[in-house]
Length: 248
Ligand code: ARG
Image (cartoon, rainbow, N blue to C red; front, side):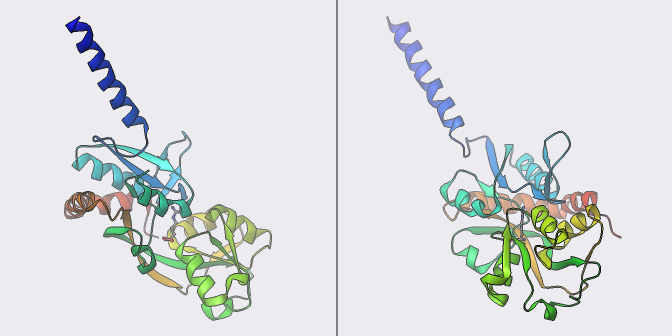
């Protein structure tokens, strides 16, 4: 009888453990990263269907340092902050810009890269500088800083939101928008993959990338920063960046 009771107890515990592991966010040995894997070279889906890129590798290196497994969840960019807040992911690493507005809802780790909002136009475009954007139809990825700045500067009517950068660039190619405002490294990738486009020399905004972490999880923020700073000192972050971004 006693053994049966013990067995039953054990089974119940095992069920609970599995249920917990299935419920999404961190079981104790796994860090769950959220991203939007349509943003090369920071995150994209490779030919085998894996999410790879600078952010994926940095997250893996951080997880290794913390002795945890890494799970990556792909989602819309503008769902990431809610996912961090609700705890369905432990952190977002998505070429995400540190931004005062976002700081009201999430905390940020130390920064690991610099991004520049640039302007993509057709090669024969009359748009030559930021000053020429007035009255033009601007394509952006929804919820990004490019979206936020352009909406602020030129008004909602002039800004067309897309689910990802590739869709915005496709709309630029077929004339639905006059330009696309997006981060410089993805911009380079999109221009390379599409003929007849160029990036203007003028920078629209310079910004810092960091991981977004729940305000409720100071411990993770501390651990993440510690691991990140060790990786910086070891030259590992630069090594990862250099693997994906070759100096031209
Ligand atoms: N840096 C911009 C922002 O934070 C764009 C990031 C988009 N990232 C992505 N994985 N799609 O708003």
